[in-house]
Length: 138
Image (cartoon, rainbow, N blue to C red; front, side, top):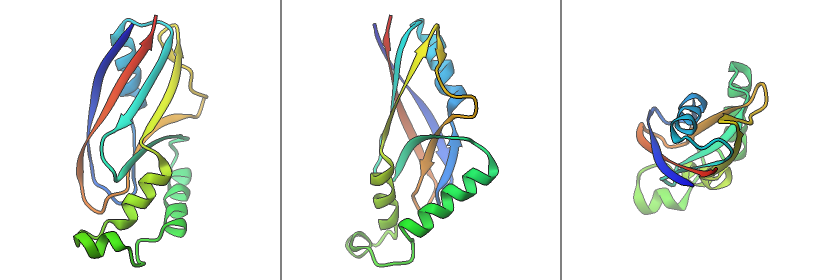
């Protein structure tokens, strides 16, 4: 069985991390599928998906890592072409990845004790994000 749905999230941007674990678990529960996988995909080229311990210190460390790895304040050719100042967001999102697959058993996500599913919005402004949720299993 395959079901398709989505999760809608309003973001602030600037490397904001939003815990969507509860919404994903609800979608799995509503599907009626007991064992399988849930594939998540964020539509857009300036956001990504991951798992993380959703704790203030780790969130701060994660955001700082991006500032060191893909700085905002350097020249990006995308910015010169489009003038929107979010070249860094496109590069960060491509490194992060737009999709995530999580298995579930007996209707429950098989996440670790301190592991949550997060949407990361790298853009330089707020956005309305849609996450495709495809549930496959039996």
